Image (tube, rainbow, N blue to C red):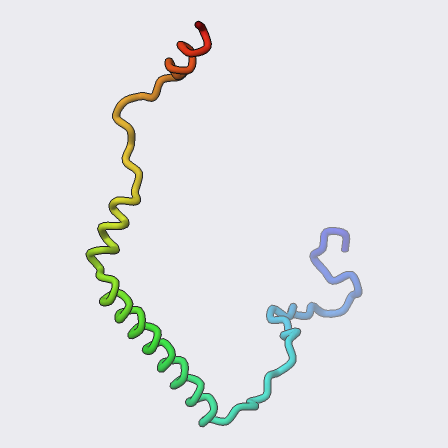
Length: 95
């Protein structure tokens, strides 16, 4: 029995339950079909309204203006290295 080949209680082997029961209580179908359908239709309608208003805003502002603003806002890397110490400050304090 010390090697674990036979059950310690001497009874025949019992298969382990691989699937534990859910801790969540079972959910009862509380909504009718019509209510579920109305909720889905409302979600689709709200999504379509949001997409339409976004398209209208893009048309009013202008996609080309948005693109130009984005390109102007991106920083460009500096081509020349910045000096470690400002020479104007050093010249004004030494005199």
